[in-house]
Structures are given as C-alpha cells and as structure tokens.
Image 1: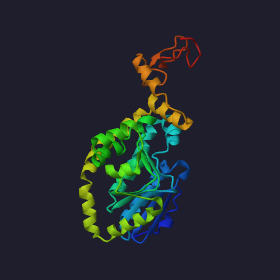
Image 2: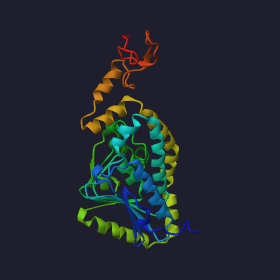
Image 3: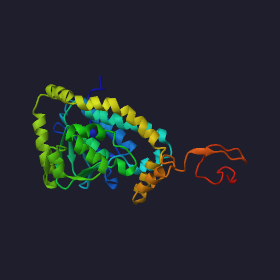
Length: 317
C-alpha cells in the first residue's frame, strides 16, 4: 500500500532533469544546457528515478525524453567529469557504469512506448539514449554523431550494440569509426529517427505521435514492446558487463588521458603521437612507459621506463 500510488512529478525536486506528467504523458528533460545536456552521475540517478515512477504510474501511457533548449538533445556523458575523476580513479568508472546501465535498463524496460524528442545536437551517449528509445522525432537542424574513438573511448554503452540493428552494419561502422556527424535527413533515410520536422513543429509532431500511442491497449502495447526488444536485449546482456569492465580498465591507458585532456583543453588530440609510440616499439598503453625501473639509491620500484630520475629520492636512474 502506497508504493504503487502515483506521485506528483514536482514532489521529486530534481536538480538536473525536469520531470513533468500530464495528459497520459511523462516528459523527462535533461536540464544541463550549459553542458549541451551532457549527463553527470547525478543526472543518471535522477533519470532512473523518473523512469521508474513513470513505469509504475498507471496514469502514464507514453514517456518522452528530450533535452533543455534548442541546441542539444544530449551529448553523452560529461567528459569533464570523466577527465577529472575517472582518469585518476578508474575503478570509480566501474561504479559510474553501474548507474548508467541501471538508467538504460529502467528506460528500455519501462513497459510503455518511449519517444526521443530530438531538439538539437546528438553526440556520443546521447545517441545511445536515442537508440534506447522506441521512436524518435527529430528537428531538422539536429545532427547525430558518435565520438568514442575521437575522445579515447568506445561507444559500447548501446551504440556499438544497437546501431547495426537499427541502421545496418556498414552504416554503423561508418558512424562508429569516423565519428562524422550525419544530418537529420540522413538519420531519417537510415532509419535512425522516425520523423524530421522544423523545430517550430517539433512539439506538435511529438504530441500527435503520443496521441496515437495513448489510443492503444496498454497491455498489448507493453508485450509488443517486450517482443521487439528481443535483439537489443540479446546483444546488450551479452556485452554490457564486458564493456563495463573493459572501459574501467581502459582509463589507466594513454588514449583516454590524451583524448579527454584534449577535449577539456579544447585542442586536437595527438592521435599520431600515440601511433608513433607503438610504431617505434615504445609503450602506447602507459603514459610514461611500463613500470620497469628500480632506484639503486632508495630502492623505489615500479618507476616508469621513460623516467631519467627517481620520483621518490631524485637520484639519477
């Protein structure tokens, strides 16, 4: 008694999302326009709460996910948080990924149709939210891109799993490998979105789609969703645990350090510099080389290969 009774949306007092419920529709808006609606750890926690509430509320028939403003739908995880936290404590990324997986699992298994209202730029993990949604209505000025290999990561939080299902293998590889943006019209032609409209007509188009979904039987809709989720569920459950562990370990390597430092510093990553290290037989995995030296003066061990002096006592190696 009480657990399954609907709560007013305003009772949640969210800080990084806007949650609204009205006329059978729940709307979740990522409210971080200063960061192009990139999500932080807190955002993920709040999204999970809102999705669970919408799932349990029998007064809700459709869930709409969008971003604040008209510049960005969502640009993925907050790279500044990644750079400042996870390159220093990679094990904490494993914890963060747990929150990410929980948010996506709650969204995909919400038991009701979901719509991505794409109001602007979509990048990285933002496209993973688009792919996790059942349907997408896109403003004509929006672009969609993956960015993993540009910033030292891998888009295996849904994109590498779902893009081949949604747009086909070759187009998926193109998006994942090149990180080139595609236009809203391309996204429509490729099947990545369902409809493209001028921004001024976006809410009208979303509302019209919501009405079509509201006027269907809820139990039949819920089970239809469960059935068509099969291939996504299959590949997700086979890969996401591996992704969680690999990405966490990967934060100890050069690539995320250089890629995310470059993003924060607003410069081009030194891609060729990393390649040259490997081509010259040097370490392209460790920032300062493998931990091979021992100081003959103080006995410090595990000193990186490229160091000329002991970091403990300053003696020449």
